[in-house]
Image: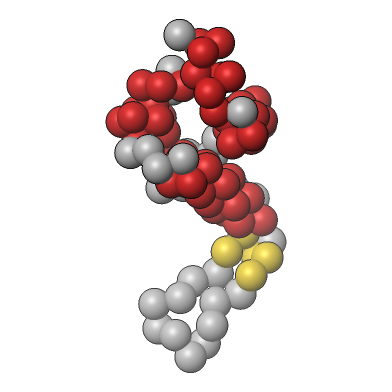
Amino acid sequence: MKKEPITLPADPADAEDFDVTIEALDRGQRARLIRKTRTGLGLTQAEFASRFRVPVGTLRDWEQARATAPDFAVAYVRVIGLHPDMVAKAVA
């Protein structure tokens, strides 16, 4: 198995810190965008999932960076952030 290069090395002064690969960094940035969009709208995960037709388990995995949100999902979340009412109406 090929080992990914380290993008962000662990802080040697922090025993709980760890090395981060570029793939993990990307997954974390996508998770943050999704979580910030949802919380910025004042919605719980269940409310966001229901309103925008995203399976709540999938949303949870994306927000907790257990899974990487695909490009189309990131684009969808960005549109939701800009036009939440229009998107909700479109998927209703």
